Image 1 (cartoon, chains in turn purple, brown):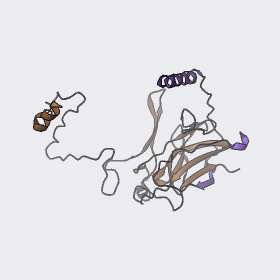
Image 2 (image 1 turned 45 degrees about the vertical axis):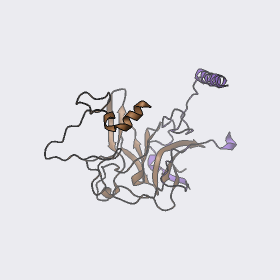
Image 3 (image 1 turned 120 degrees about the vertical axis):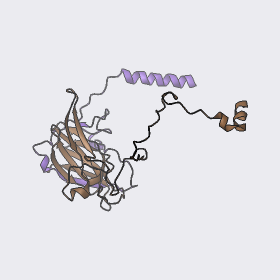
Image 4 (image 1 turned 135 degrees about the vertical axis):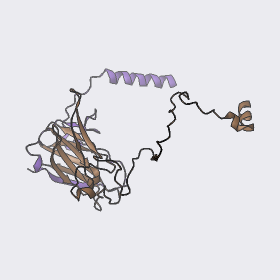
Length: 83
Length: 191
């Protein structure tokens, strides 16, 4: 039983290391740090030096809860109706 | 068992002898020499820094800096203070950087921007990635925490910050959040 489980773990490791790495587009913020490599980089340039001074708060949402917690990094998720 | 019984009969005999200077156990720190005469040596708790009685750091600013490294050239490209000490900024001293616990990281974009918040003074900043100069900044109602998120929907780019209301008290170093302000703050360019 123990040996069987160990084999399964090894196999899963071999499959994941053999697959090609997914191509990163850095066009959205799908993971902590933006991408699966947490690069904290976005390939977007719609906001740039020419228009950055026109930035405005466009929406906000309250998230009340325990204070002093570590809140990490917001993540973007494609809306269900576009998937 | 015999060893334990022997130790309990005479604990001092079981003590490890004091290490001679220079020898000691592997990895042990060498003994610290006494301070020069006329000087007092102070010790602080682990992970903390010395603060003056007004709560500010007992050494010269900047107290928080953002540093850009040109890794291909092996040099510092630019360096600037990040955040302010609100009580000093009100007196016109704005180049100290944050002296409170700052827990914000930057996001870089292909638009040549570096986006970073400074929680203790409730500010968010957008910098020129090549020079570190501030291009735009604004104040939130709460203290931004963590890294911003940059995303696109329907041909518009958005920048999202989480900002916390920790309940920490106002001080020279810290502007507390407004009541009921904890949440997400999202910026974009109006159509």
